[in-house]
Length: 398
Image 1 (cartoon, rainbow, N blue to C red):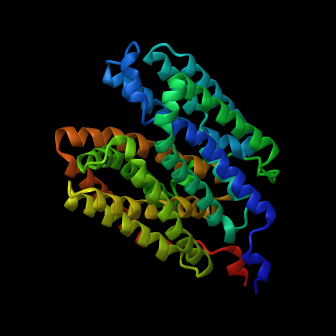
Image 2 (cartoon, rainbow, N blue to C red):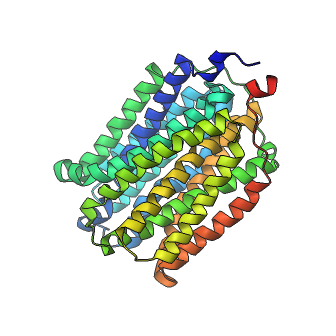
């Protein structure tokens, strides 16, 4: 029988969760601050009249992330989590400085490529798994996933104001400072990492695991839907009469409400052994959102706000449960490799969501984006229905 203390996170686990979530938040805030303002700013730079170059400056980060997530995750299995995370953050600082000093769009692209080379997501997630027990891992992953959603909402509010005060160069310098603060957090605040097996996980162990590959498809579909939605939502809000500068009035409440709903869902998944039920319900909610976006079209601001809130609920639940699930079923010596492949598919989804979503809007029509998202959600729901939820060790031993 499990002891009562098993139901509470230890101080070390709480510290690990908060500090690792802050590393994600500091890094992602610097990235998100650029998104709402760079396309407009680029018009005043040499090369800024080339839409392809501007798009590359925005998306280059995701491409290099996709290529390097697996090497960084595998390296964290071989050399330890913290050294790999610090190395990646140093690259991120260097890339931010290059972009801050850039005088044309081409040099910004170079900076963004270097930023993306610091592909630490898999190593950070693996470290979170190393520092937490099974029964609390989803809570820590929820902290990390929620921090990303929160800083996205904050960036939508803060970016225009900061841009008016310090300019684009200042935003890139701020990004460098935030990444440096993340390095400080890794060294001095994150608990000491336990030793990991000094072996390199074989790709065949991950690629041949049907459970892991279904989760990999899931994160690809989730982030493709997420990015593709932002091709439609801002324009829909403007069309509904809400100026771009006031979109935060929809984004921020949507994210905050989603947190309130997400917490009991995560608690139920963990304490009631309802991981699969909560997981599949979140995917079904994504499908509902995509159907709603297709049917509502330009119906108005309130339908969009409600659908966006429902999306964030599903997104945050899935962002918490998927990496936790992977960390439980991956071979211990290949945990970083498994999470590296997972984060690679995540980065590919982010990149393709924007590129494919934009192409579909231009050549087929806005409704095609929602149809694509709905189709992916249906396939994902079918695949997820055949999965077996991991059982926390304390439950198995009880």
